[in-house]
Amino acid sequence: MTPDRKPVKRPVQMGKDRESRILTGPLALEIARFGTPLALGMALQTTFNLVDAYLIAQLPLDEVGAAVGAIGICDQVAALGTIISYGVSTAAGAILSQRKGAGDQVGIQNAAWQSMIVVGILSVVLGLVFGLGAGVVVHHVIGAKGSVAEVATSYLRVAATGGFSIYFLLQLTNVQRALGSAKTPVALLVIGNILNIVLAVVLIFGPGPAPALLSWATPIAKALHLPRMGMVGAAWAAVIARTLVLIPNIIILARRFDVFPPKGSRGPNAAEIRQIVKIAWPSSAQFFLRIAAMLFINSLIARFYTTQEDQTATTAMGLVFRLDTMALFVAMGWGSAAQTFVGQNLGAKKETRARQVGWITVAYDVVTNVLLIALVFSYGEAILHVFDNETAPVAIALDYLRIVAPSYVALGAGVVLGNAMAGAGATKTTFAVDALVILGVQLPLGLLAVVLFPGAIRSVFQVVAITNCASALVYAFVYGRGRWAKPLPVQGEAAPWIENSTDAGYG
Image (cartoon, one colour):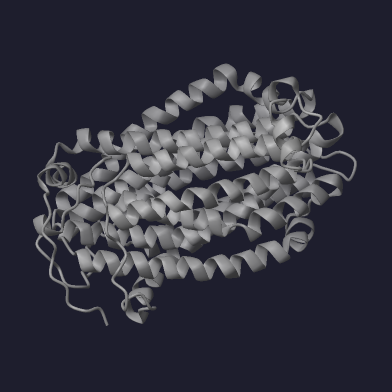
């Protein structure tokens, strides 16, 4: 049981002014103000991932092909664990944002702490499943072959076992975002990625040899007696960097947001966990389906368009995955803003305002994706050649982008509207939409493509674009009906909004 607590009065005028923007400010302006750093932060996140891929591309020629193909597979498999955990973060974000809008500080503490307990349990379970089972997943589930499979298995063991670092990092930054802070969590993610890149250079190339541009890492590795790890070094770098960035996140949540309950109230709370899981499992299942759909496409490519000797198509998919991810992550940035605005406004009983959030945020994401598409069509070939100098995989990757990149607008719209509905806790609805599109459109069309057009890889790419468009249409229809916009029941003891405010705004 949570003990009764009297609200603590604090100097709140600045915090009140900032926080009231989400509830009372000009909606389009405030979404832009709050969402822009989140979208840019997610774009930077992907940019740092591109740098990571660039580092791997600097490996000796006899390692590059396998490494590029393996990283495309491993990132998607590792993302399965991240997505399952992110479902808990989504549920916590919905609950926290609504309790923030209702001024329920005790409820905020309960939801934040109990969601962290759930993430801790998932960290252990997912680490065991994807870490110990890396070989089975790569060889038998994905169907990877040859050197790609060998490298992917080694990388995945490290990335999946250390998955707790990204699970908790996303959870802690998502708590800050749900409570109204956009810049601080993004800044911490950027710091973590910079640290990741530095460590990756040192661990990938070790004491040498290294390209001239990266030779500064050689004396560091020698001084620390670090071996040359190759591609696996990138996995270790990510785990270490993310773990280190968890420390300032915890300090900020404790001192600035006061989200940790008092001693004696930190044990598992069955009722709170049930509410989190009730919202989380459809969200986790939804994100799992999205990544599984990407793996399905990769599996079709690996099984029908590669051989033991020629894995060019798989390498090409590893190249385009990074650009696909940028479109997805930017949309998730805007979607996170939509989730916060929907949740807090529903918590404050402003349902009409909450319904407007999704459409406005989609407009911003469309503008962002048009710029990304222009970048892809103008500089796509040059970007791809940074990561692979071989002509064959780049040619396949360019063909993919010509077909799929224009559908990034539709992909982003679906993601944003889904996240907006998640802010109301309507995760069963978003799961149903994704299940309908993936199982009813992508799966049958993908199978038909390889059966009816066995030699035409472009038919599989067309399936991806069609799926993105179908998702946007269905989400727009469901969002427009508005049945999802129902506030969650407020648990805990609500205190007056002003007395429970902190100085947490967009900073």
